[in-house]
Image 1 (tube, rainbow, N blue to C red):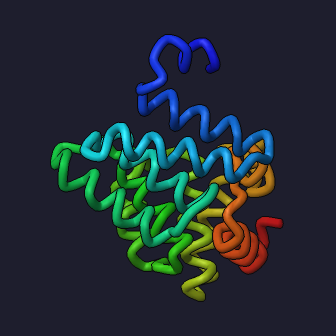
Image 2: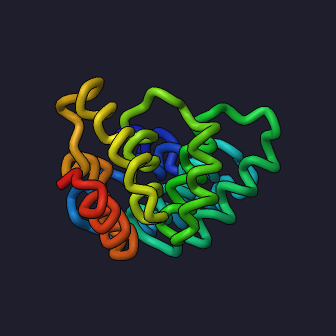
Length: 176
């Protein structure tokens, strides 16, 4: 990654990835700086905005800002791929907008274990245990090695509101 930055320090995608690496290393303030740089370098790049939305919500930042970034990305790219909706769903989830998150998840990659996990969490927090348990069983069958804890560790999820919401949803759904 350092070589990529040396070749082009103004590449916003490299800045996004550098932010993720810093978060993996526990340098949350460094991650936030990289995310700010990415946004400053590409304020109208829909892909960057969409990816940044999820990072703002899950790693560091304000989840409502993440929602705004994802919504802006969708306005900039009306033919957006389904992964844009996954980013919006994650930001909405952390912002406590569970029904809106579910709406976005319906447009997200349908067979992704992360999409399914967020559906479980939303259903659990909306007090819809039957739906949450049904989807949790599907995850257990189709993705037996997938766990909420691994998602938190490998994303990495470090934003306190995200950690609280994910862990509470998982607890209510019986996924921990």
